[in-house]
Amino acid sequence: MADLLDLSSRVIDSGVADTPVNRVTQELSELRDDLAIVESFSHSVVLDTGDGMVAFDTSAGNTGREVVEQISHWRSQPVTHLMYTHGHVDHVGGSREFAARWNSPVVVGHTNVAHRFDRYEQTNDWNRDINLRQFGGIRADLNLDLITNDDPAGDLAPAASERPWKSFLPQGTLRPTLEVENHHSLKVGDAVIEAHHARGETDDHLWFWLPDTRTIMAGDFLIWNFPNAGNPQKVQRYPGEWAAALRAMGAMQPDLIVPAHGLPITGTERIQRVLNDIASALEYLVSTVVDLMNGGATLDEIIHSVSLPSDTLALPYLRPLYDEPEFVVRNIWRMYGGWWDKAPSRLKPAPDAQLAEVISRMAGGPEALLEEAERAAVANDLRIACHLADIAGWAAPDNPDIHARRAAVYLQRRKSEPSLMAKGIFAAAAKESQTIVDTNSGADTHKD
Image 1 (tube, rainbow, N blue to C red):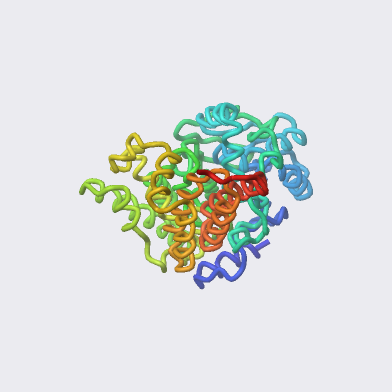
Image 2: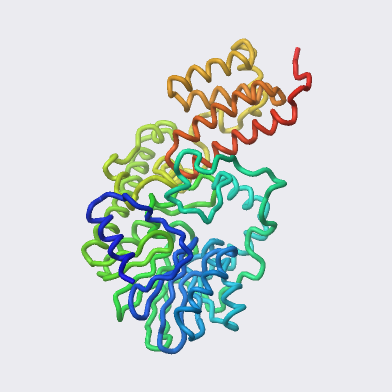
């Protein structure tokens, strides 16, 4: 079905995303006679090789069964190979459903995928909590264009008792049986498939080149949002190498590029424009931050001086609706400069609660701090408002009135933010305070 390609061409050529581009329909669309995509979270792209099918990514554990059903209705041949672009759970979690339908497919992935799975098992609860905050209590299978709207689900991050899963990595997720280090070429039926490794969103990412049809399976190197190269809750991202990977893809002169999130793109010139715009944005952030670091700037100075033009961030495939440039700046600092931000007091800081108690006493109490926070919020100075609300909350950890007002500040902050990552963290802050309100309402919280 050419509709997806027509849609992406119209959006890119017009520069206007007047319809969702990150779609989760759970429906299959043909891109060519031998190639189809199931729009899921993430997508699964399936190639008919003439001697079985190859699936690029499997979607998540809770969507894999529907993906497999869609593929089965498209072709009767078995899926003989699974190609992991990387080991994130929304790309590999559905693999158990493929294994249940088609016995023992070959699983191709980077050597670091196994290390990732081991880390997920080691940090299972940590990663569950991260994703609950990151998605702000909003179902992860919703359209990413929609879940960035103001409070679309009308809820906050669920409490621990409401967690919908116990294992972050779905049980039964298949591990790679054919591991790739830097480059690997294999022939499946009539199809030649080249796997290329590059670090970008992850250290275990592969992108796949099909030379006979000049097609690229890009994985998360292309997500129709600003690159997820700064995520504040996850391990190191690699924005410079991400840009280099996009340049390498462009050098192939592809006719079709299929991402794991968002719309497939056709047309060599159109693809080159998209890849160049994304790579240039990342390269600018890396070079500018490094230049400022070399000039002796602090992290605080860099964060508040480095930005991208608004017309760049308005491009349909660069909107900061998931990650955002400010977070990428922090990740560049972390990569080249470590975790210390050059503020001496924050090298070995006092506990937040102890510092908050001193500041609160000097300011006239936590109520005075909250009043100032609320004035700042009315003036739309939400960065200052949140600083003051946090200090008040730390100084009065059990006071329901203080925390009800702190929650209100963070709900206003959430609604003002464009990126899902910021919305999720600020929603979790509001939920944190609301839990204190619910626990302590009616109790005597007066402190001498």
